[in-house]
Amino acid sequence: MKTARVQTVAFVGIEARAVDVQVQIGAGLPTFTVVGLPDKAVGESRERVRSAFAAIGLALPAQRITVNLAPADLPKEGSHYDLPIALGLLVAMGVVAPDLADSYVAVGELALDGRVAPVAGVLNAGMAAAAQDRGLICPFQCGPEAHWAGVQVLAPKSLLALINHLKGHQVLNPPEPPQAITDDILPDLSEIKGQESAKRALEIAAAGGHNLLMVGPPGAGKSMLAARLPGILPPLDPQEALEVSMIASVAGGLPDGAIRRKRPFRAPHHSASMAAMVGGGQKAKPGEVSLAHMGVLFLDELPEFSRQVLDSLRQPLETGETVVARANAHVTYPSRVQLIAAMNPCRCGYLGDPSQACSRVPKCGQEYQMKISGPLMDRIDLHIEVPPVGASDLSLPPPTEGTTEVAARVEAARAIQRERYEKLSEGKTIRTNAEADGHVLEAAATPDEDGRRLLTEAVDAMRLTARGYHRVLRVARTLADLAGADTIARTHIAEALSYRQMMHLR
Ligand SMILES: Nc1ncnc2c1ncn2[C@@H]1O[C@H](COP(=O)(O)OP(=O)(O)O)[C@@H](O)[C@H]1O
Ligand SMILES: [Mg+2]
Ligand SMILES: [Zn+2]
Image 1: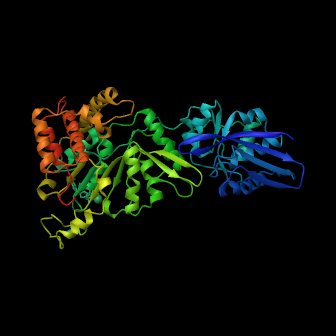
Image 2: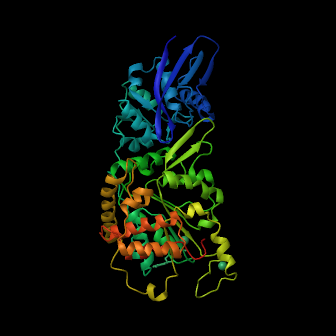
Image 3: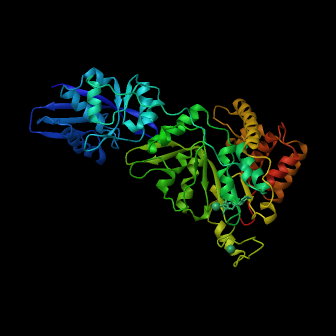
């Protein structure tokens, strides 16, 4: 009995691992079995394949059909196995030539009427196909996405169209290539009037990659500020853009099949579950913190997030990765984000508001701010207050400086950091001051005489912890980099000290 073989993939994190679909048709009562750790959706594949065959007038052989997905110990999830299983059957039935089928990796879901429906992870599958020197067979709608892998792509609308192509009856058109890497238009910083110190803090956050907490009453412009951070960050380089797109692809697919150089901006609602935030759940899909990889994770109303969700962010913020636990495996997703958090100063929102008093000073603010754990606070280098914008500021003409000017300064400061940490990083990948710690940081950030004296005084007066001390050094290093200064001066230390934790926050 001969075994027909077709290649497909299983997703482990963003990696598409090779899976061999082996199909045997043997003597015996008519059955159709799929083995090799298939989950429920893969099991249902049988029914979809059977119907899709019937829809194009092909009957499954009335014999014993066994499909094995190998290796057996790799979990198989999702609906993209339909098409490779169908193709394996076609080879086993002698409809499609074995060598031809073997020159592709196939992914796709089959509708009952034989159409090929879109699936997640096509970009990643295409990259795996490229590594194996094979072409890719994927759903028609996923053709533009597959294009980025640089392999030969067959993107049929239906199973019949695929069969006709492989038999040479009617050749499929190559899929439309997507637009070149897209640069989206982002909201501009010049739309924000006044708020000079908040904009300064945003620039520092962008320059050094620092996490930022904004405390201020509703309507102060916190969301507006956060949304303008991706615009002042340097765009993704092509390699980074590809990695970000691979995460988006396994999460469901790329919108219009485009690869974007814009940094992701994700703003999950405070009711988000842990699975939504860090990934996991039934399919171990990436969560918001991974979808924001290399970009911005904006958490508005920070204290309203559940404690469990906030705690689950500590690992990605520390390591740049999220580990999602599965029944029998762990899946790792890249999750290097810049956290921008916003909150009201107190539960009622009026603490410090000149026009209306908070009814329960100081408890209202203390209780509210205590909801954020110390370890999370420790990962946020910059804390600022955003006061309500005054009427006189709103009537000002728009500022002359906007996103373009600020982005140029951010890029210059980042170039200085890249060069520095290439020399200092001791094998670890450090790109920004925010990622420097311990003696790497101390070697990078040495204040001059005056600066050191001020820092020592502050350590005593403000009772800075070791972490607090390092936070000041990191921010001071960024301030000096923005100024193009080699050594950290007293002014840099003084400004860095002003971004320390807020009044009620421990
Ligand atoms: N500094 C500002 N310049 C111009 N418009 C502003 C400014 N601050 C707030 N606004 C206006 O107020 C609205 C509310 O701002 P928003 O960012 O949502 O505040 P917050 O997130 O702090 O509650 C914005 O959509 C914008 O129209
Ligand atoms: Mg808001
Ligand atoms: Zn209050």
